[in-house]
Image 1 (cartoon, rainbow, N blue to C red):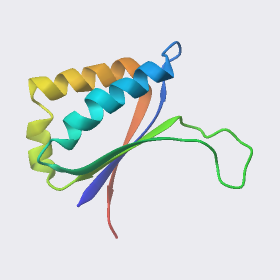
Image 2: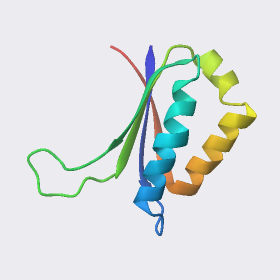
Image 3: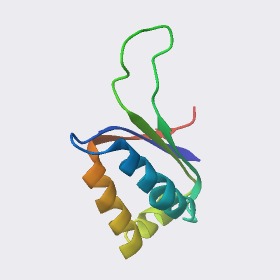
Image 4: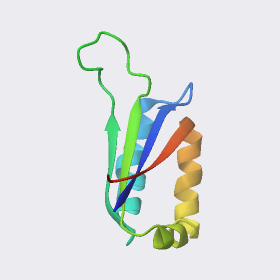
Amino acid sequence: MSKIVVLFNVKEGVDLEVYENWARTTDLPTVKNLASIDNFDVLRMTSILGSDQTPPYQYIEVLDVNDFDVFGVETSTKVMKKVANAFQTFADAPLFILTEHI
């Protein structure tokens, strides 16, 4: 299994409560329902351990992908395109990182 890690801040002017409500009610349940996804978490960064610095990102998404071929098919559906487009209205230049276990 591989993971996709997404680091992002919300766009200026976006209400964090509106984004988080959308994440809880739309993004999380829709993505978790995909056959290619074993788990999906959206995490709010709160602090940097041992530091007073502000975290460089507000949010992290972690997707556990069990099959990238199936994931590619599933993310090309109308429903997932709608979710992805909505995400882009909230997220400011999200960084999508593909990972694998060592």
